[in-house]
Every structure is written in structure tokens, then in C-alpha cells.
Length: 73
Image 1: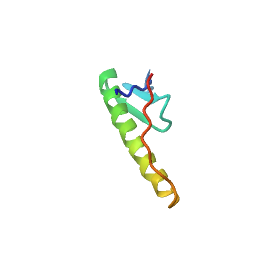
Image 2: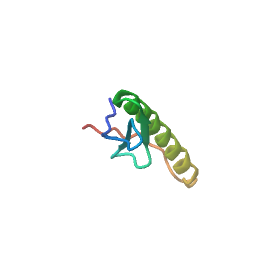
Image 3: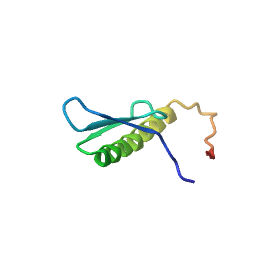
Image 4: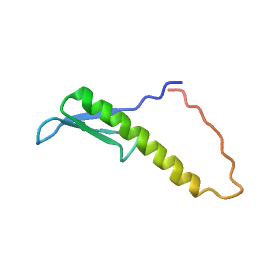
């Protein structure tokens, strides 16, 4: 399955571009070109998802069961 996210790319006041992801709050990216910005956002999404996974896993109770859920778009 391919994961797809929405990137919103805008010109930055200081030059270049910045981007954020609608589905992953807190994930953002910046760059001199749109391609650089989207690549940086991709890294930001990966980092934010890993961070959230780790943080939420630490909050699980001993009785919790981990499952994988696949969502088709």
C-alpha cells in the first residue's frame, strides 16, 4: 500500500518555499525550490509519525494489544 499525504506549499516571505501536511499536524518543510521543499516535508512527515508512534507506545497500558490497520484511499 502506498501512503499519500497532502502537501501545501507556499512561497516564504524571505525567499524559497515552506510546506505543511494537512494530515500530519506538526510536519513541515522548507527549501529553495518546490522539489526541495516537498522532499524536506517528506522527511518531516516521517519524523513526526515516528515520534508520535514512539510517544503513544509509551502511553499504552499493559493490557493493550497492538494491531496494524490498513486504510485504502
